[in-house]
Amino acid sequence: QVPVVESGGGSVQAGDSLRLSCTASELNFEHFIMGWFRQAPGQEREGVSCITWSGINTYYKDSVKGRFTISRDNAKKVVYLQMNNLKPEDTAMYYCAAAKGPMSHGIERMMEEEYDYWGQGTQVTVSS
Image 1 (cartoon, rainbow, N blue to C red):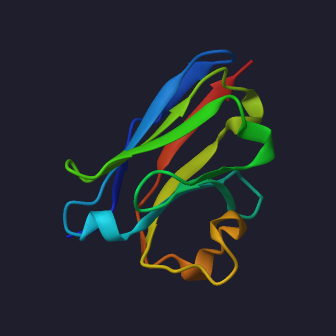
Image 2: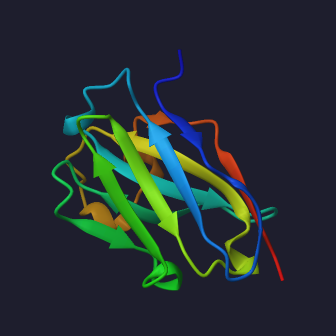
């Protein structure tokens, strides 16, 4: 069974909102740093946002600050990415990932090799 499963993607218009969800029912969830990455066609995968075990510390890529909000519910073993005011450049496959940590260079680096479990991805398409 896949330990990390994303949902919530879709096709929307610019300015709309989506909320992505990521469940990790097989993991000792509260001990994992959770991150969202995305990969647009022809581009490398990039870190978008992440959140520490307690939810106190978060990181956002500059281009999504003020528009995206990451949160987690450790009791439900779910991490969310609320995406508001979506733009066409947000179009990508979004991946959820879980990292045991600690991160060697802080959570802000969002180094893919430090994430232990990955979901299959959920597609977000934003049209203008």
